[in-house]
Length: 219
Image (cartoon, rainbow, N blue to C red; front, side, top):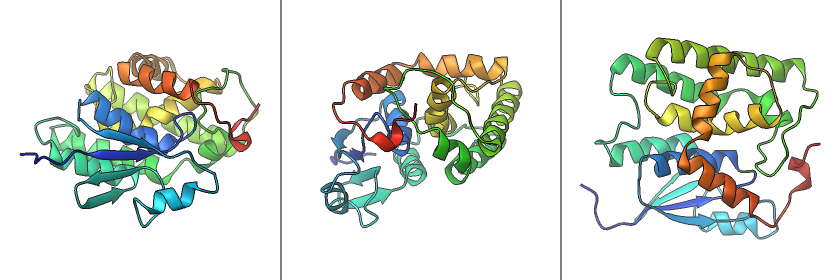
């Protein structure tokens, strides 16, 4: 049973902060109540503000009473522990292992794609030249999605929305925004993610943000 603690999620700019988006969209989809604390990133005051919440000094951060949890995947795991009645990870052990493998691959990998194609919810969709490494990342993601979708029937990676979909949500935006080609099953999956009310809420807030970070405004 949950106590009286109100979960607090510290996030960065919604326009750019892909790691913040992951636990945020998961908690929204699974209707986990929380208070949002937004700290604009890459300002002189940003690091001290984040250090006030976590020794790592990075977003996102989850505050659960006296407990502090940082890193997107660790936050997702903690939320799954707090709400075992909600299928944040697939119930089937084999599917759950598969979902965790994909989530960890996303957490640790695809650096070329992430570095070259920053998440930017305010950018108009248009293609850009990308390296062979970034293209290989996109092809691996496409293959992983196709495998999960064919194995578990869709419309999300493991049937219903899960932590794996939350981990890949910023990638959906990247592939869509930079118009990187994917297979038809992956395209349908991306469109499904984009129909989530939580996606629309994040996008609207991101587009309403006033500040801009030139390093993430790739033309």
